[in-house]
Amino acid sequence: MLLYKLDHQQKHSFLELVQMLSRLDRAVAPMEASIIREAAEELGIDTEPSAASIDIRTLPTIFTTRESRVIVMVELARLASSDTIICVDEKRVLDNIAQILGFSHEDLENIISLAQAHARLRHGIRRLAAF
Image 1: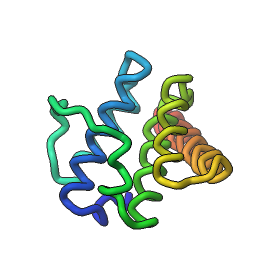
Image 2: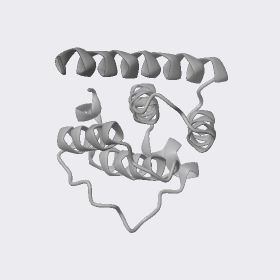
Image 3: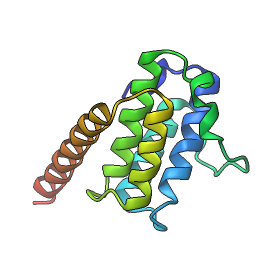
């Protein structure tokens, strides 16, 4: 969606966050895999798992603008919501990242709500297209 606005370091850091988040529920759902591929394609980088693990405490030094932080949170929430269920571990990580990036609890709930609505819309379109 707006990932093209991220700089090179932000793109790689975002993909590391995506990979970390997608491993939390121990299974990458087909919709999650699709979103990861789409994100990597938009970012112009491959989806091979990184050997490095990002330290989320460093995120404010990487995502320095409000715009980049919103982009990251929206896209992470979209990934977590892609299978229509945000597991407890995914929610905990989203909460931590949101807090580190300076989002209120209400901001995060609004972002998650929008991401879940997007996931429901995407699933509905796929069902309709299957006929």
